[in-house]
Image (cartoon, rainbow, N blue to C red; front, side, top):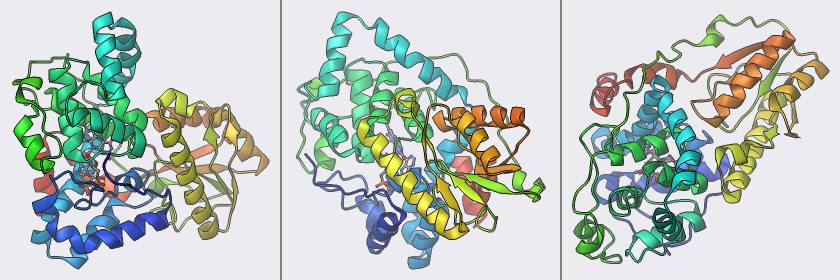
Length: 401
Ligand SMILES: Cc1cc2nc3c(=O)[nH]c(=O)nc-3n(C[C@H](O)[C@H](O)[C@H](O)COP(=O)(O)OP(=O)(O)OC[C@H]3O[C@@H](n4cnc5c(N)ncnc54)[C@H](O)[C@@H]3O)c2cc1C
C-alpha cells in the first residue's frame, strides 16, 4: 500500500497543499511519472480541483507567479488537460451517456468466466504485480497516480480483456477526484477510442522502472499488443458559448443554488452578486444514480458543506441544506418560501449534476421562477477550442499567453 494520503474536504486544505507543492513544481516535469509511496512528486490537488474548491486559474497563476513559464510548463499543461477533457465532453456529451447506458448492460451480460475475472480484478486478486496493489490502493485511499491509472486501465482492457466501461465505473465509484470528463475520456483514450488507432499498452519494464522496482510484473503476464475497439462516430454538438449572466435581469430577490461542481462561488464571476438565501441541498438518490462509494459520497457532502459555509459568510445569507427526495421540487418550494424571483447557479458540466440541473430548470420554468446559469470566464474562453485534439487546444492557450 502506498503511503498515507490526506485529502481534507475544504478549500483551506486545498490552499495548504498548493502552497506545499509550489516549491516542488519546478521538478514536476522530471519526476511526475514516478509512482512513489505518498506521491510526493505530483500536486495531489485533483480531488479539490474537481469540486472547484480550488480553481484551475488559481493553480496556474500560483505556479507562474512562483516560477518562469518554461520551468512549470509541463505542470501547467496538465492542469489544462482537465479543461480540455471537460470542453471536449461538452462538444460530445454522448460519450458520457453511452457509457452510462453501457455499464448495467455489460454487467448483466458477462459470461461466467469474464465475471470471475472481473471479481478478481476488483478485489486485487489477479496475481499481476502492481495491478492488484492499485486496485486496493484505489478503494482504500480514493486516489491513484496518473501513471498507475494508465497501467491499470491498459491491463484491464488488453490483458484481462474486460470492458473498458466497467473499469471506468470502478474508478468513478472510488476516486475522490472522480470526474465524468477526465475519467471517461481517459479510459477511452487508453482503449484507442479517443484518438482512433492510438492505444496505450502497459509494459512490464516501464512499470518496474517507474515504480523504482517495487512492482515487477512478468512480461508474459501482460498483453504484448492492443486489439482494436470500435464504436459508431459520436455526434458533435455546439456547447454553450456565452455568459448568460451578461444578459440577466438583476431585478428581484435572488437565491443561490450551490452544488459540488463549483464550490468557490465567493471567488470570481458570482462573487459580486447579492443573494438573499443559499440552497446547498443534497439529492438523496444522487450517490446511487452516480455510482459513488460511501467514501466518495461522504467526501463530496463535506466539501459541499465547506463551500456553503464560505458562501454564507461571503454573501451574508442563510443556507438551507436539506437532504431531499426531489431536488427540483424542493428548490421550487424553497424559492416560494423565500419569495425569490430568481435562482442563480453555476451551470454543471455534462454528468450527473447536469441531469439534476435540467430537472431544476424545467421545474422552475413551470413554477414561473427565473433561473440564471453562471459560467466561469475560464470555461467560456477555453471550451470552444477543445473540439479537436489536445495539441491545437494547447497552441491556442500558449498563443494567448
Ligand atoms: C484512466 C484514467 C482515469 C482518470 N480519471 C480521472 C478522474 O476521474 N478525475 C481527474 O481529475 N483526473 C483523472 N485522470 C487524470 C489524472 O490521472 C489525474 O488528474 C491526476 O492523476 C491527479 O493527480 P494530481 O492532482 O497529483 O495531478 P498533477 O499531475 O499534479 O496535475 C495537476 C492537476 O492537473 C489536472 N490533471 C493532471 N493530469 C491530468 C490528466 N491526464 N487529465 C486531466 N486532468 C489532469 C488535475 O486536475 C490535477 O490535479 C485519469 C487518468 C487516467 C489515465
